[in-house]
Image 1 (cartoon, one colour):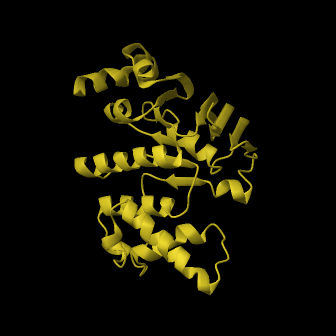
Image 2 (cartoon, helix red, strand yellow):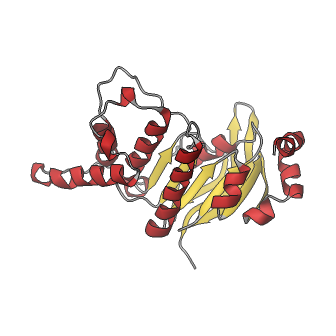
Length: 254
């Protein structure tokens, strides 16, 4: 049996006065890619933010690598270092004169390593390797202000890769990529899952992508309406239960 990297038990999260996520339970094993799908306003991003400790939980428990996330969102540093998060939108002050190499290096620095001057070579190699993995090594000296949307996504993924992690959380991360860039992005995720035994949790609106690339699916609409393999979770009956009237529009578009 594979290691359980993330376990969520009866999680409830409020947005102001209403329960945006209510009594949700699921688990992620190492080496698996799980998608969260559901209509707009279903609580997908809220669930991710609660798992990360960005939003407080009103009830339930979250365990990452067996360690509990406390109500105030705190985790032991050695556990938090094992999580990488790639949001849908990356907001940065374009006036900051930061290069791609410097930005990716922050993914190493945020871990709190005390790197002696003589060991800076290890940091540089980690940055170069991460950029090479996402085919962005040629961008290393470019200012982040000059990146396209697709280039920014690849650089942010390199930021996540600069140090080995166990859990990667994506919130509509491929948004803004063209078809080729999206295909390459998911090919890389598949390699990471296979090579590094990562557990991946991603929010997605692209049900066709989910069918092609994901191992498991969580259908969410405030509560967890179903979960299972794509063939099971994305059946017309389950999608209709999760999406309601939106499912009719989705079927019409496709």
